[in-house]
Image 1 (cartoon, rainbow, N blue to C red):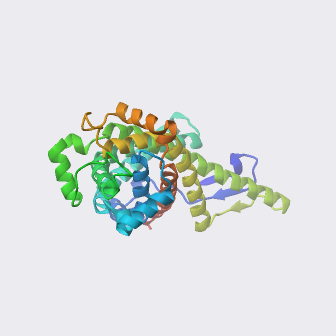
Image 2 (tube, rainbow, N blue to C red):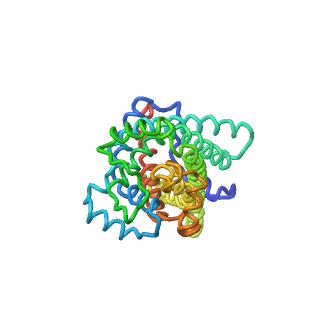
Image 3 (spheres, one colour):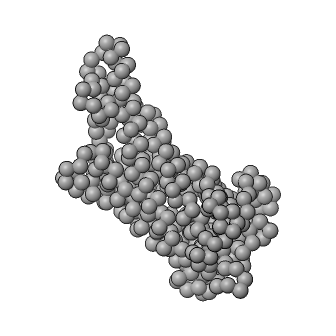
Length: 342
């Protein structure tokens, strides 16, 4: 791919980047096997932040990250930061496979269709990325919702009742025990508790993330192109071109991912808090066993208004940024490793 500096036809400096790797160019078996290994490692590195975010979201009062972390270390040790990790990891492989397949197929097909209609390359890329993010999130939630329900119950299990009341009363010995108890007490519906709100959270979140990432990525490279062009003009060089090395490409991908994560986290944080509470907490005494969306919103408004919906924003933003940065760089690396012709 070649991006003109600031996409100006009068520019004399061009940025020459490697061509995108499309779905039809991938060795599918290598893509899924290597992807499972790489993303399992990423999940393990970022899991403690997810546990911290989950506990903050279900807490009825504002608790700082440091206080929550200290309490967990003091009462549970490092093991507390990896509660439910085995269950989460077990679901990562099929969920990621569904996610990556839906993402690449949709991006390839929608991108080609929008270009044929007559959209510009920048607009077509943003539309294709948004559609791909939407479809991949919906496909992955078929696996992720039951895994989320089980792993999040395990995440908060060791927390003190004084910090998190209304936490589920069952004591689970592990992922399989939690799965069987939830299935026995609530049926299949219990494993898909919060499925609707999960779709409403992750589908737009992914659509916003991928479209914002696409736009940010192009804007950053356009800015670099402008800078390179001005530098060339001042130096008296005409018609020069800039070929970014791998470090430059990783840096731009990481910055674009962090920007996209910030936008996505701010927009979808209230929905994520409601989803987490629906999946983890029981209803109030005398009420229904599973809290409704209305009851959950009412409780959040009582506890702190709109601010209560943004509890855990710091860890979620950090988690999303680090996860997205490592995910997108790993993902691009994975696609180039998995091409049919190396």
